[in-house]
Image (cartoon, rainbow, N blue to C red; front, side, top):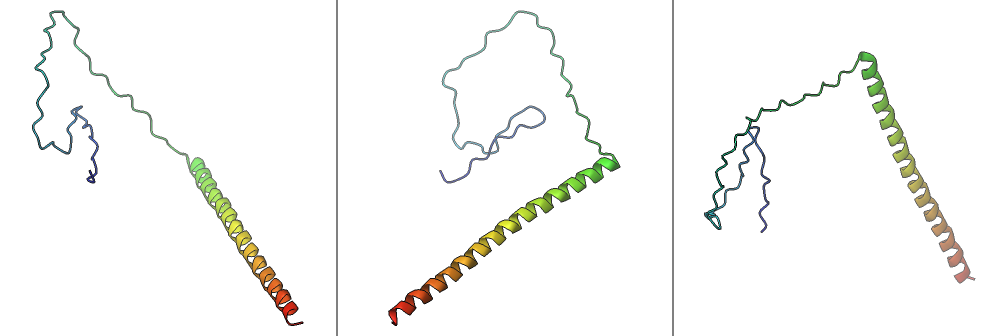
Length: 111
């Protein structure tokens, strides 16, 4: 139950071989044989895979991609730093307010 199940990976040959072999022999429920077919089928032609062309970047396209990626990193970094700065400023202002309120409340007890 705790052991992870490894998925069955199909091989390029089309055969599917499970990586984890069962320990007990598996017997079929009923011996069923397929009826013989006496019709004449045309032979199946193997289909060739259509290979898509690789993406080729021109030097200008490569420069534009790098510049866009660098710009995206800078924008995301600026947003994250500004959020961190907003949290820091809020924390500092709450701390200052707490100190001022404490001093005001302590000053009333001494009178």
